Length: 472
Image 1 (cartoon, rainbow, N blue to C red):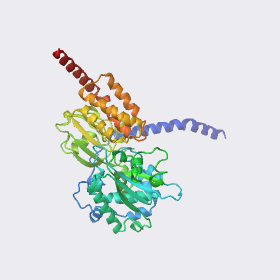
Image 2: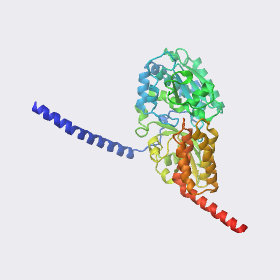
Image 3: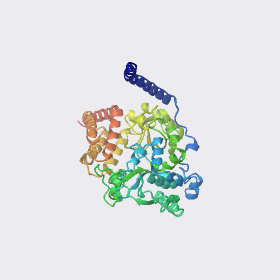
Image 4: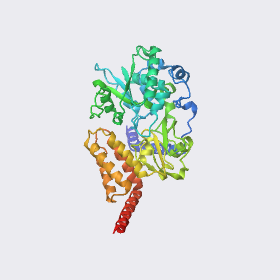
């Protein structure tokens, strides 16, 4: 009894310390291995989107020759729990900007049935400035999305999928409709999809081009025929979504990679990129680069390598770089000294006060007027605000007026802190994230380019004083 008691004492007192020591050693080993591992240089056999540039046949026959619709019936028959397990083990995070764990989000739909049908809604309303990835999937690889809808729908027990596509995407909508009809004719979707006994329909819905309809609840409102204005949450779409039924809204790229993950295994997808930032990703590179492009690459590769390997480098060389917006217009910009070694993933960019967003890389060299660039983005958000929330409706107008005075330098240095405070009063005080998207570019400019703003104000005051003295 005494020996047992002593053993229990020592195990209670020593085991936590030993466990803590072991876990800290593991953490150090993981950190060192992550630092030593080189990311990037994705091999062709590991690419999911094999017709991104439209060089091959995008219709059903061509898609099947590239591996689409292979053993889809077997995937469906394995059931929703297996599909969700693979998606969770893959570490896939939403590719539409928020980066929420996909498997967890899809699992919210698996509640006891209450008589209401469930729906999958695909957000194809790609309106973020600088983003041009989803349209490439729908135009050149539409069957990836059609099959993805079927697999994702099966994982959540959905009755149908609605693809809400941006109204300006005429060719993309046309190709998607052709692909959907081909899938129906081949028995791949519809009644008894792929011979699995699972019934699943897919519908296309064309929006009218409003940026706000990229927000999931505004998209649902528009899909129902109402004005595209975000809903208050809760209730969340997984409880009360489209037509009052449980709904999951997912990005085109997120849905399109699901079949490849199920075929090749979640562990295969998780082998790319760092922990919590796994998989491959479509990056859109635009602005002052020699070869703008959309490319599929591994997560966590260095930003500099992404631009130099795939976009031909910065116009005038890397030293001519001024700043980069790494994830679409709504994330804060980064100056050159941060861009030199930052990685392209969720955690690395969050650590430098920016974000991966949609991975739309906007490059600005030293010829760009950085202040006017940000002012133009704020004007976009002012135009696209739905006007429902006062901080966004009024705040974006105030930001625009102040920013265009900053362009000329017609302001006082104290107004720099004022615009920062204004952006903080907008951020986090609105129903949706459009207010945040308007605030963050301003915050990035103030954080990294305050000396440029102050220099403009000084120059403006000097010019004003000299012109006044000359007139007298």
